[in-house]
Each structure stands twice: as structure tokens, then as C-alpha cells.
Image 1 (cartoon, rainbow, N blue to C red):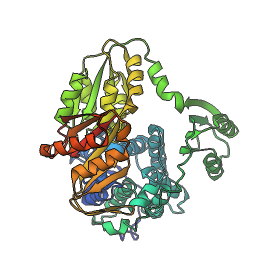
Image 2 (tube, one colour):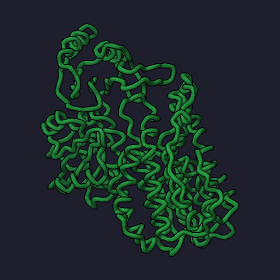
Image 3 (cartoon, rainbow, N blue to C red):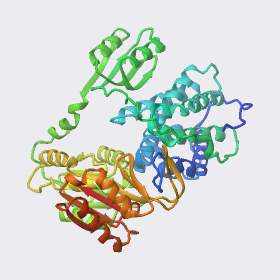
Image 4 (cartoon, helix red, strand yellow):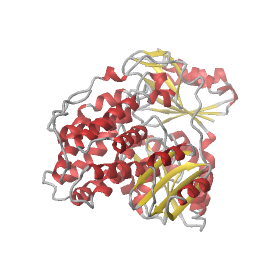
Length: 539
């Protein structure tokens, strides 16, 4: 859906114009939040892509208040810190970093013309790609790249026309996201975060052209699921070296040829081309080739090459000085807080439907009296906020990337208060994979995942990104998933009870586990989580 804004010409923006564009972007995104939440790939009843993007953007808008913006620098200084501190989840992380980079680029100008708009998008894209350890195509980064390319190619100087051109390219790319991420094709949706970024820019355009915000139809972003989408999927190659190059005084740089060359050498490409310099971030297997190519265009001012396979180890190795450390764990319920405390964790940050922001994690870090801290995010969608908090806090902090609370518990068993930061980070990282995690949910509405229809009220179990079992009986679904996960060859099963789980069902689960594997030890503990009825650890 596009707005009827084609008759309004905009040659330049001042600070108040940009402020008004951001305000309308917040309104547009908020109005369509439910669409984004409902388009989540997995049939979990508490999608939060829209919620995380709204929470992040609204934090930056609150910093602006109702006062007029006197300069782009003032606007930037007001928004950037709050965007970063309040970023939530992967989607909020990308929104925060993009607009932080955008604002950092435009703040030195008095007005924003087409050239400054492009500069802002380039710097925002660069900030996003260089901040994500493993950027994935078919997500928000694909849309940002499409808009940036469209702004490069746009034949008009009018900012409104430029944004319309960028939005058209973005919507074309949006419907290609399922071909880049077959998991989307299997679920029959476009990427929610990618669509959310389009909503933000659409809202900005409407703010600049005094157009009203409208609700977008969710059905327009759904299509027939392809149950075979993942069968022949080959993920994009993982390149080894994270390479950053700064070129001074470039001579006759052909942006198109440079982009073609880089596209043949790697991915996660972020490129800023300025008459005075070129700035590049790329993941590649041929860093010397890339640097040599750029050296023929201009003078290499600086370059940095990091081996991503050794990067995590290098971060830890830098702190092998024996510094005493404590642990901060993010937990989905009060029962887990008690469990982690018993394992020596100094501070637990409890969260519910709303994931903790980078600022909340940063505040929790300040409450820990230790020279260094290890963070267990215990949720893949919290890891970006944990990483950002680490970067903002100015202390020695290592994030052990635990994807769920079961991995977090396993990692906590590797912690010793007698060891330093380096040894603890290494030992805890080694423990992460010792337990598998299954999560039992009840569907809040009818949904489809590939060829699997999940009716409202049905129980289903997620194992990673896949639905492992489904049925009308929660215990039956849990046992089916446990058997498929190899319970017969395992030794321990731990069931963490959610707030809404009926404890009377435990005897059936215990008996079913014993029937599959009489030698397996079974224990139940109160987790208190609100999302999952059961979180099951299998080791």
C-alpha cells in the first residue's frame, strides 16, 4: 500500500521537518504493529517483532519531547542514545543502529538534501552490517540495502521522489525475502522486520507530505505456504574474515563496478562512497584481494581483518589475566532466578512478554560489584541487546551467546567463582551444547506452518526452529517430541513448569518418560515462565 503523495515536491529538510517525519513514522509503525507481530515466522502465540520495533523507535521519539528541533545535531543528540539504550530484540537492534548511523551522518549539516539523505542511508546501512556478527539476507538488512541502492540510482533530486523510489524498490525486495529465507516460504509470510522498516520509511514520507497514516492489510503479506521450501535450501556461504577498509582520496571510483566486484567476493557488505573517502565492511575469504582492489582506487588509510572463526576466542583470550568475574543471567521467570542464584549467578534480570532492552541490561550490569561480568542472554532475541549493553558499559564484559534458558543453565554449571574471566567464559561456552531444549506452547489462534495446520487451542512443541510435535493433549505432544529428540539414549530430563501449566499433569509426563526410557532421571522444577507451558531440558 502506498500513499498518494506524488504531487508534493521537497528539495530539502530542516530539523523540524525531519522531526515531524520521525513522529509520523512512529504513528505508522504503531498503527500496524499487530500486522508485524502476526507475521512472525513461527506459530508461537506471542510474536513481538512489531512490539520490539515500536518500543525502540518510541524511546527515541520520547527523547525529542514536544519542543521544536533547532538543528539536526540537536535532533541527533536527543535520539541516538535513547534508541541504542532502548533497543529490544533483533528487530529493535537493527532499527536502533540504522538510525544511529543515519543521524550521525546528517547531524553535521544544516539541511538535508538528496545527497545528505543518501549519506544517512549509507552510514545507517554500514552501521547495521558492521554491528551484526552474522547478517542474514531476506531480513531487514535486505530492505535497507535495496533502499540505499535505489537512492543511488534515483534520477530526481526531490526528496519525496527519492523516498517513493526507495519504497518501490523495498516492496519489490520484500516479496523476494521468502526466496532468500525458505523458512518464510514454509510459513507463507514475508519477513516481518523487513516490512516494519518499510512502514517506518512510509511513515516518514507521509509526515513530509502531510498525508494520513493508514492500517495495512495483513493478508497482503501472506501467501500459500510451501511445505517443501527447506528441502533443497542451501544457506549462503559463511565467509571467514570480517574485513574493514578505509580508502582516502579515491580516484575515479565507479560505484557500480566496485559493488559488482565486492558482491563476487563476499557478503554482509556495507559500503559508503564519498568524494573524499570510501568506507567498506565485508565478510570475505579473500581480504587481501579486496584490499588490493581498493588500493588501486585510492590510498589505504586503514584496514582491519578479523578471523571470525577465532574472534570469540580472541575476545576471551584478551582477558586471560585472571580478573575476577560475576555472571548476569536473563531469565523468563522467578523459578529460574532461584535456580541460577544457586549456581552462583550474581544477578538475574527477569523478563516477561516484553524483552529486556539494552538499557535494562546496562542498568543490571551497574548493580554488579565485580571487575568483569559474563552475560547469559538465554534467548537468541536478547543477545543483540546484551551485546549492545556490553559495548556501552565501558567494563570488561563477555557475552556467552546462549539461545535459550536451557543452554543458560548448562553454561552456568561451567562457572566457578575461583576462576577468572577468561577461564570462566571458555568453560561456560564449552558447556552450552550439553543439553537440548524443547518448548511446549498452546496456540492462541489458527495458524499454518508449512503443511502443518495448527488450530487454535492445540498444543505444539518447538525444537529449535521446527515444530517437533502437535496434538490436543499437552503431555502427548511433549512425549512425542521427547521421543523424536532421542530420549531413549539420554540420561536426564528436567521439566520447568510455566505459570499456566497444570501440575496435575506431571504424573502423566513422568510415567511417559519412564515408559520410553526407564533409566532416565526425571525432575520437575517451577520456572514461572509466561510464554511456554513447559520448558524441557534433555541431556
